Image (cartoon, rainbow, N blue to C red):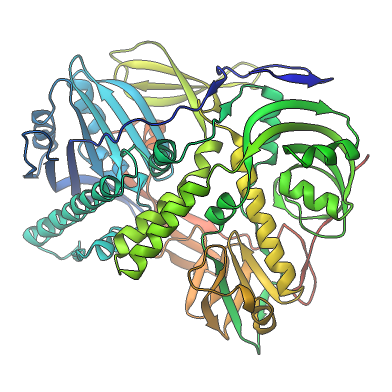
Length: 611
């Protein structure tokens, strides 16, 4: 790969430039254990309970292959020793056993996972804990296990999963039910997970989608690389270019344009049909880094945009709140400001004479790389929808929405620095003497690891992901412009809340299923907008970060349960004890992405950066 620079210092990240490799196989896991646990709650104080194993169910499922028929081996347990005996009985040399639970952190901790893995001589191969995504890969001298959260693929309630596949989740009153009722419910929960994964694998195999990977995003990437990767994508390691790509990579547009109660008129919630797949299908994306330039003229940048994809840091002067600027949070100001933009934003800026100066830009070869992928999965989704196959329709939706983020993926880098067989499992933060540097250490399964950084994954190409989100923001902006100023009150990534006039002006774009068109999701005369992801629409009440079972103390103050993550448990020093605590959440409803007028109308901030 040839990388040229004009007046810009060159340095590289610790990654070898390479061409993204295609997938060759449709390999599926053959040996899987699904399990769930139920617990006693031991009161620690008024707001904290320690969870202790009461009972559980596990099912070992062997998929049919070769001369082996399908097998399901069910097992009831009420001690963690019995559970691990069952697990280890189903491990074998040269065969990786997948162990899956919903909310893996809880169930793995309740059965004392770290303790038993250490006792069996297992060492850590890989550990990931981010939100609901959990992966623990271990092996000893001859056997390998990987523990996975079912929410790595299905971020939904078990009740919704059951409804989707036609198995009703058995609900019980945990405080009053008998042990037999609790056992039946627990087994039912494992059955839902088992049947859901059977269906998932049938979907992947029957439609020749991809092998099953550890996460939804990885599975989507495998599908792309198996059947839809026809243009080579060159993964580069130019640090300055990647830094600019990261600056340009911003999320969806979430804004309030009015705060308060919208009275005396109908309001409508509109959603774009598959916004991200729509912009992925219909636009070219960077495929190969070509050149980085500094201090060029706007005219020179415009010339590059005719044939190249571009990421550029530019000085904007505008009276339109169209460009995403990240300063503490993502906002859309007017005035004069420096911002790093992608191809669609730059083209819009030139069309409206908004670009006054160029600091630095990166040029790429570009191609339409996603059309085949989106066409296949959107057509499949519509076919399954019309046939009433809800479970497969949902899987297609997940595949469509999960791909682009893989190109923007970053991760923690950990290195083993020694053995510590007698040290308890935990995470520590070590502060150096001047307090300016913090070192993160992780003690796990008798080994000591140090976090060396948080950087690009091996196959990341942030410019691709940045272009997807930029095209999406620009498309939403075009819908807002068509609806007309004053006719939209709120937006969130792919949705708008509009009035009757806004709905009427968007009428030509209304369609229930067409890709990129807009569907009406709700009509109501009751709309109260309190802030970002904080509103009431008809009978629907949305308050981000507040659980459904939270207790409201006063207006804007809630007490709710706090369920620790693997990281939280390791930091507590008690990774084999699961304690559900309590936290008080104070909603700060001060709006910080614009100026709020006395009448509730929000106007954008005015910036005045120096030239």
